[in-house]
Amino acid sequence: MAALMSVAEALRLVLEGATPLPPETATLSDAHGRVLAADLAAKRTQPPDAVSAMDGYAARAADVTHVPAQLRVIGEVAAGHPFDGQIGPGQAARIFTGGVVPPGADTIVIQENTARDGDSVAVTAPSAKGRHIRVAGLDFKAGAVLLSKGACLSARDLALAAAMNHPTVSVHRRPKVAVLATGDELVMPGTEPGFGEIVYSNGYATMALARSEGCDTVDLGIAPDRLEETVAAVRRARESRADILVTSGGASVGDYDLVHKALAAEGLALSFWKVAVRPGRPMMHGRLGDMHVLGLPGNPVSCFVCSVLFLIPLIRRLTGRTDIEPRIEPAILGCDLPENDERADYLRAALTTGPDGPVATPFPQQDSSMLVPLAKADCLLVRAPHEPAARAGGRCRILKLDL
Ligand code: AMP
Ligand code: MG
Image (cartoon, rainbow, N blue to C red; front, top):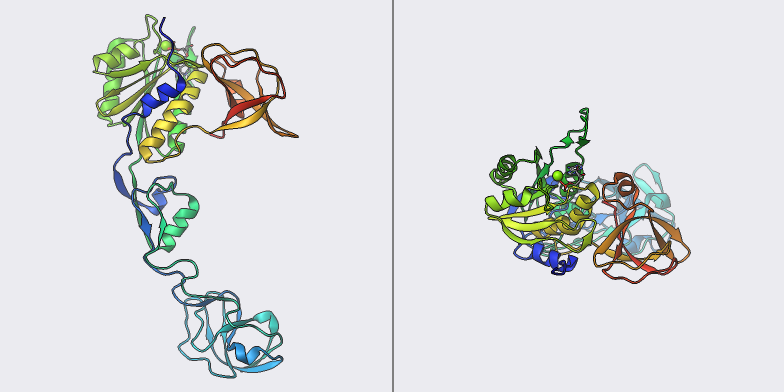
């Protein structure tokens, strides 16, 4: 029997030929987590003029070197309300945070160091030239490229883009992910399952993951285990112009595993159909025209783990992100583990904090149908094919499930 394909090779094939989707213009409120398709340069200088960083008095430093000093208050400046006068010797203007520093003034005496009496103000502590003044361009200057093509826009980046005076940005289009379940035994949550039926769950996790990665989703529901209906569902995915079709279940070689047959009937260019991974061996990948297809196993844990390993990187590639592979981090093993077999293992595990860092302890039951340990897990403990037996306290590798 041919050796199963490694996770790394399978991921390489999934990403091969996957390129970022074309750019589109998005408002800032629709751009969080999306990837810039072009450099973004500041359209203005920030702050555009010297402004006060404090509430107090704009004055000439030379007048407040020796204190106490008495100054005459000739005007007032607040944010958005500049003062058109000039500060001469012995003069000051009342100023509030964000107010433009009037010409002639070169320091701000903070309110706490003054005593006001009608038109005059007594300064009780010296204030050096430039003190509490934000010079023009302190933050950035017009023309500076402050966000580069390829940046995944954080909440902070959005505030920066707005301050740069961009109401919209050019970002890669959101991928559209169509999600299809297969299985005669599946009924929707909230319905009473009949004898031999179970409640559909996979799609909720897959769609939530896709949406948190910035995708639009199309819920194709459940196709019964009949070829025509599976084919019809695949056609609906194509009609919805999905970039990715994710199926769950029916990916094995049983009599009722019709996903491959249906996809083949529609013209699938299959790239692989079995990966050396646990959970999740019967998983397939291919292309139907422009649509990427991931045929994931039906067991809920397999479906989820394969989504983390293959769907998320594929989505990230389409969105233009460059940090696309799951982050593997070091941890300490919380229990002994036997030698691994030929499949890479992704064990559901709890994370605790030990004296030497995070400790990962796999749950005793790892059945790929079990949603409770999956939901309770903090991480997947990753074991390479044929990894030797390991002792508690040794090093291990984890993939955090903060998803
Ligand atoms: P299959 O890959 O179709 O043989 O399914 C493997 C196992 O996963 C079976 O026990 C199915 O009932 C279960 N399963 C398949 N699809 C789903 C789903 N969408 N939600 C929950 N369980 C499922
Ligand atoms: Mg099935």
